Image (tube, rainbow over all chains, first blue to last red):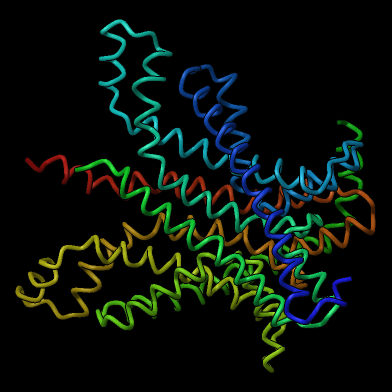
Amino acid sequence: MIESLSYPLGFVIPLLVAAGVTIKVSVGAFVLAILLGLVLASIRFFVPSPIVRIPIAIYVEIFRNVPSLTHLFIIFFGLAYMGVRLGSISAAVIGLGLIGAAMLADVFRAGFEAIHVGQREAGLAVGMSPRMVFRHIILPQTWRVTLPPIGNYAVQVIKDTSLVAAIAAPEIMFTARNLVVNTFETTLVYGIAAGLYLLICIPLSRAIRRLEQHMAIPR
Amino acid sequence: MIDFFRTLFEHVPLWAPRLIPATGVTILITASSFALALVLALILELFRSLKIRVIDRLIGGYVEVIRALPILAVLYLIYFGLPGVGILLSPFAAATIGLGVVYSTYLAEVLRAGVDALHRGQREAALAVGMTPMALFRLIILPQAVRVMLPPLLVSLVSLLKDSSICALIAVSELTLIGRVMMSQYFLPLHVFVLIGALYFSIAWPMSLFVRWLEPRLNRGRRMAAAGEP
């Protein structure tokens, strides 16, 4: 069917469809990473017990010091071997989300630590509960501190979805590869694929930079 | 669980002769692309230090484009795309160039931060007290620049090691590719990739710990100096 379409259109349309999958996987992984990262960092913040901290630290270290591809292979092929069959797209979202969460857990921790301890003490002194201090004083300020690394991560996760081509999720790079196998137009197809990433990532990173300037804490 | 480790340890002697050279390739590709990235970053920063508007614009555009591309796309363009215009590269060369080009944009930023951290007055002061430019560089600039640049350079090296796994997709026979081959040969994907993950971890984690140990030590003098200021 692809071959019957006229020459450049036959490449662009499947790649645009694939770009939709790329965005879907990115958004899924991003949301999972933010939520899980925030939960992990909050647990570390509230619970000083080593029984809770050590497993989180192990999780963060393993996910930050092993390549993403290895994690994706373990989640996709390894779990299937154990009898847990995930679709390639759900494996991609879970894999990238878990990797991102490990990174963002550290980002959020640094964000919490950046808020002066006096603010926490002042909040407790005026009779706020620790939860209220966290929700009304620490968290709102954390967003401003952590926005630049979160913004970088948002662009990074889009680029990292290219790796899930290796577990056959039909995103841009996987589709490009299939098109090349069928047509042998390597330079053109990979050129269009790269162009699509530029079209997604450059406006996004510019918008994030604007937002950062807008949200920056005035000195 | 016990079964898992028994099978794993049964296979380790069988797999080791292939995994050890593959680890070597991973380290080699990391080292060569890091070296290339450093050289390219240095060239970028030298051109930027000329402060010529057109060149700044060009470099800015280059950095923005490279940063917006996934490493896999860069590697595919170099390995599969360049033959279309008559340039044929070996997988290893393509991987080195691809990773080197991508990481040059990150390392350039690290170098710039290192140079920016130095106050211009120091250079003038050193020259004024009669230091030769060589002594100025060795005794004044280098020690301070290393202090600023070393931790982020090592962090980049760890990321580069992890990203070298992507080269498996352009047929560089490093750890991840050998893992994929072994996976389809033995039908033990979990065992193979847990072992491979452990190999990567055993290289990357000590480096990460070293950075964490090093960073406060490098900053010690500086923080005291800052605290001494009114």
